[in-house]
Figure: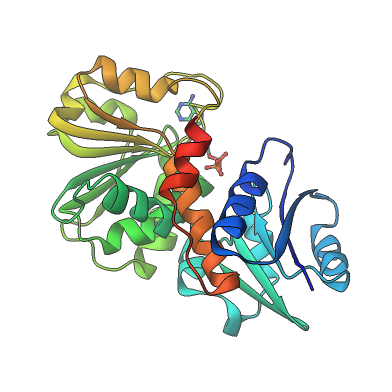
Length: 279
Ligand code: ATR
């Protein structure tokens, strides 16, 4: 029988996940269908139970439900990555049991280290933002042994709270985890990698990115992507002289491949799927 999966979010119409998973299924010969489900903010939990009762095997979860998705799984069936992030983007169901994982961070690392070949060990890394997107990636970034991992957020208090809550759960990150306000960036030595995890790109707003942030061989990565053309962050990084600039489409495909592997036990090749999305 054909197995059913879906992505749930609000809004969800823009999601590329159905296209990505259909390509993975075709490539690996897996018998499955993958839909989009508009999530119900008022009773997300009841909605997931209804979907499970209808025979759904697994879900990808996107904004604004990732924290609530984690809460659906019991303590024994939450992956360490989901616990550290405090959020789940991948669920699967075995009878009454809900399994929760978060593949965002390992998806980012697969894109940075695997596809792009950007070294993280020993790197000075700056992460912009302190929302859900950043919480999803901090664990794997810290585990990659950077020389330092600094977080800069417009609202200092939010970044401090995040680091306070997450710090004890993170692996030791070499030079350590610290928090900055945007006005302090102009006094920092250059970074090897700057990751934009703010939602500014989505609303087309510019960020505080003084030119001293980047050295000649620095890399800039936006977790966000646009349907057409570079994000504002990418344009700002290029204007500051950065040549290695990427958007988050590669991460999107990699986190989907990891979710597919959790469900089906096989990891699809990502390069052809990313190329098709770019075309
Ligand atoms: P998400 O779950 O996508 O991360 P979020 O939790 O709303 O979304 O977080 C958005 C992040 O982008 C926050 O770090 C936010 O900064 P504040 O904590 O100060 O609100 C950041 N952000 C959004 N717009 C921004 C802008 N124009 N400049 C700088 N930071 C911005």
